Amino acid sequence: MDLPALIDNFKKQDLNVKDLVALSGGHTIGFAQCGLFKNRIYNENNIDSTFAHQRQSTCPRNGGDSKLAPLDPTPARFDTKYFTQLVKKKGLLHSDQALFNGGETDGLVKSYSTNAGTFSKDFANSMIKMGNIKPLTGKNGQIRLNCRKVRIGCQEEL
Image 1 (cartoon, one colour):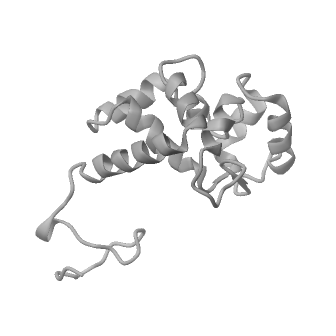
Image 2: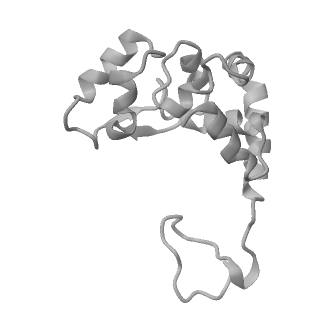
């Protein structure tokens, strides 16, 4: 997704550009399957060529779509490496690199890449805003023991 579409999707949830960039920083933790970024590493030109070749060695053009690659160099640490990578044109996902590609979010990405305190504060505030988007309460909602599984037949709150 390109930047205007990302911004529009966030606006539809009453989230702003700062929320978009801060929450995208959650990609500082974790991995993505090759199938989600293969087009980027083989066909896009706003990517560091050395980085693209490194990822191509893990993710062949044909097959291997379920293989994993880290979203940033420190996939188990909540830090600002995700933003540092974007500034270097080493964003793994197209939608990530769209945040630093000559658009209105470039300044925030650069700021977060060098200021962990600001990023952490903004991320926390944006998480709170996101958590308040149309929450289901009372009998309309539930607390899940496993976020991937709906609790069937549970009336009580934990």
